[in-house]
Image (cartoon, helix red, strand yellow):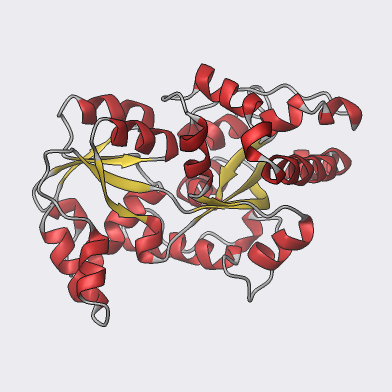
Length: 311
């Protein structure tokens, strides 16, 4: 979406000097913690910040904050190869519609003992923990866990070195091209990643006007694209062809958009993400991730809401 805004010349028109920098998803928060030497503002998530907040903010004296929620990513998945006999979790949920615990238990029994690659402290690991916890097991003992970044996991998966692999939108698209199948996705367990602007508290307090403009530009570009994806997505497709781990066709890009929920105005954003009654109220995800971190011993007490400026 920032590329869409750039193609519409919205940054210049709003008096902003913006340089778009490609940063690996797992490195967004550490890049902010480098005190502006890499980026001033990033697109990141609650799910990404909290596992790093203790080291960066509490122990490291940083001030990285989740500034404002912009959209919901619900397409994170665990995938298996085309020749795998593992059936998707959705099959078991359909088989046992009134017994979710049994459905999850039978599904995860299939991948016990397998080599599973996920990025550490991300929704992919959080999903893995949740389903095995539901089944009464510790995922760290139930599978052969390998911590690997998404961009590195995909080649290992395609080479047969991983039997189950975490996959974002681009990795999922590429895996499916090679016959890979989704074993489990966020929606199966009513989980989501809340994505938005992340920055430092210092930058947020000294650049309020610029951040307000970034928010308005975001919603303007989203609304413009969504009005006619078929004819307005060329700048994004070109960018992805240059930088992503897979080159999207228009149909694949439209399918990828379906893994996300994009409010098209600040009002829609409020109703979805900021209203306590909203479908994806941000504090719900914050609490779920805190539970994960405490359950795994990563932190001793919850990361406070004060590390968000979405109050």
